[in-house]
Image 1 (cartoon, rainbow, N blue to C red):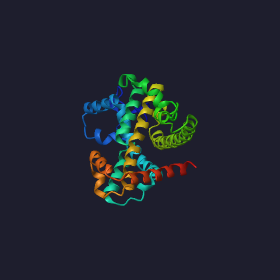
Image 2 (spheres, helix red, strand yellow):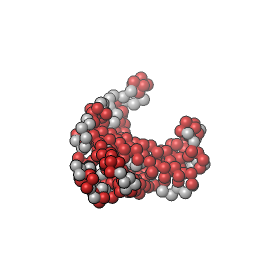
Image 3 (cartoon, rainbow, N blue to C red):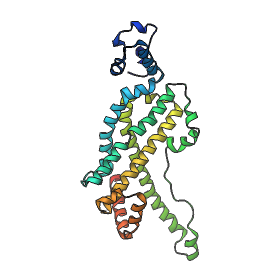
Image 4 (cartoon, one colour):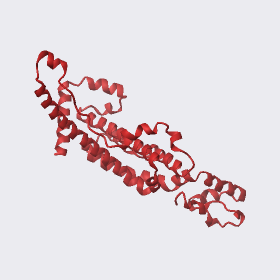
Length: 283
């Protein structure tokens, strides 16, 4: 049942003669409690006034939440393989919280807001007045942030590197930065494809978004990836540092303080390993 064909279930001018099977099956347990026709009419009027949220609750919510979690879990273990082999209960619980919190209730309600604007007389710009500022960072292809310019003054002052040597250094570093950027964009796109494979199947109305709604959608889904990536990298780092199990539950300030006590050599080693994994995947 979509937002459009919900009309067949809404009250008509002959409510007194209306047969029980004229009410959606999912509403029968509620409506049948009341024998009073006026109460039934009020309930059906409520459905009319709240058709968009009723559609999401009745037809979208369960399907999305049920199917998004295994999809996110599969993507997580593919992008962050260290998490897959973790067995410590508190860490496993933390990982499961990430899965259950990604693309589920909060994100679904953000998608509902877009849907509700599209199928009502609401203007999404009234809800998001800064929408135009999001168009470039969220909707246009992003370029890598490369090093530009001449050598720093300190190199000139102490003559430790010629301009030609500096330009060769930044040429090599910019190759590295471009590869890293492309790797990150690939992972963002794979996250988006994973989420869309579920949402566009069970919430197909989202594919009818207009241009402004699309900007909000892109902002929401890319921010969802940012949160997902941040939490997964946190667990990945926790595992790499070989912290005790209870550390995973520390507030971030305490975790960062503990992390600062780790020797620099250990951080460098794990960073090098991470780079090797990235560029091994690129190669």
